[in-house]
Image (tube, rainbow, N blue to C red; front, side):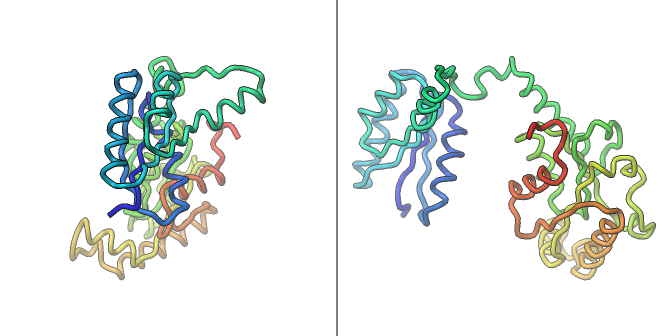
Length: 273
């Protein structure tokens, strides 16, 4: 049984409420049941949400926790006064004090995706995602000059998910390129990468973990054999040292931690620090 039910109520996608709420809940050793209620943007939908929250409170015998990023004050008031729950209004907690400090009213815009079609940043992000997909696993060498980051490392070391995360979260054009046995024989980076050394960042991984991952993809293959994984990781790390490429091990790190380290090290021009 979960310790508590947590609702994420928003008049937009609810991504902000859920991201912020999960960050706070991670500080507690509980296993909450998540209920997402996005696009609660009318009084009728608010009353429906109240009924759902209160039904949960009655059924479970304890009040749920509600994280909300509601902007519409009428809708928010229905939730506040009607729900038998602990209400954590994140916009009210942070936006109102900022309005006082900055001596101006906020835009009270519903969701950061509500006017995406008019946002250059949104279109840049879509372009970055398309770029990362087109340059995944060394598929294309074209237009690498426009890449913000080029990840290198052995196959299955985490390059693809990291590239896509950088594109989706930060709008960065992230290419990735595998280091293969032919590169190790030449003891040189792939020639296509030579002009872009300042954009390169290496990912490595413990051979034992790499073998586990590869076995899931190609069981009982030479590709997944532990001795082969040890050889490839050792050669890749030696190559990155020779080339002066910054790198880290992904073995125990989340995608978010990997991406943050890359941004700190490379500091792409596209981002403002």
